[in-house]
Length: 461
Image 1 (cartoon, helix red, strand yellow):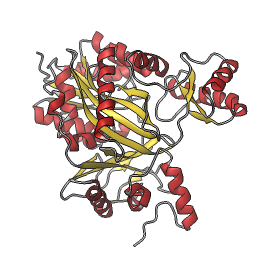
Image 2 (cartoon, rainbow, N blue to C red; image 1 turned 120 degrees about the horizontal axis):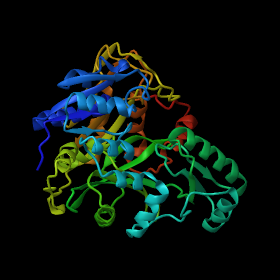
Image 3 (spheres, rainbow, N blue to C red; image 1 turned 90 degrees about the vertical axis):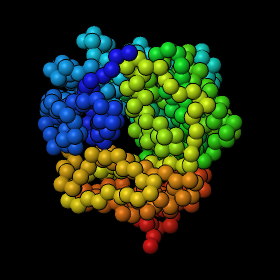
Image 4 (cartoon, rainbow, N blue to C red; image 1 turned 90 degrees about the horizontal axis):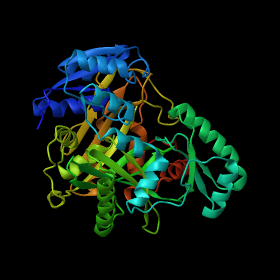
């Protein structure tokens, strides 16, 4: 088996730091790449080596494949860990790494390409026996074709980008007269975001839960799951809060969803860490939505309840090691919640870049903070607004919520606006506390606050 001496991390911020921590524990040297805007970032400071790969924008730096590969060759690394976002799900990047004899820490390029095409992924998962929502088997060719399909499926339907993700290129359609404009808008948005304007249509599920199953698989066909995460609390399809386990899954349903995810991974020859995402309807039926062929932003909640280090397992698998876990070795302990702390106005969600003038990280029992922020750090305007992930773990969900409330109260980030007040308000919401929510939670939450005459981010004393 190969043993990595040095890994380049093709990412920034908290996930770059997160990967560095595991590499340090494994005795592996790290190389940070950074833009000119990130020269004072923590991942640059804590890596063993650092290389500037371009200007401040993502296109000039973190998405600049020639610059990333050049940095890897100059520093003589064995492997590249892409983290999430940027190049993490680029089959082209994985192929280039392979051609340069640099190990890409992730699945094979052909699997990334297959699962990155949502239409192809739906077809593969259907063949693997997963339940899939009714929809178009291929990208839509015309409005007429979509009209016929939508009538067969029944409204409401949803238009999705074939190469999509993060809520871009998606439109919900409730009536036939909305279909054409929705298709044109989704296709235009998809082409701008993904350089691929292909779209497809599928049945829209009202009030679903968004449940994802964490999987680990090695290169020898062995695969297990690490249970589920409930990611239903979202705004415009962007996740805000995640928890594990889900408040609504029974043990029987967990086993069925987990077994389905494992079987799907085996069928497509998946290796590395990955996530199968499902929609769970109000009748307890689940349907394949998409697969993420990378580590997830919300992976810490799974680590907290299983004690698994998902990054360490990714590295072991990439080295050619067999997965040492059996499914029977996975135990679930307690409850974990993650709040994504974004540099945004908590009322309007407008980005809030700038310098942090005061900072206090919460601590105490069962509290974990994954962040690259610090007192005096300048949050640049060029990237995703996520600056920290606050994660708690406790014996029960009730105690986990109380622990999160306490941690949010003492977390201080001044000089910029953040979503901390919004998360505090959500922790007080009776529907959240009861676990009674769907992907429509945020719009219902805003409506309740409006009717009560209070702002979305205000917290009563």
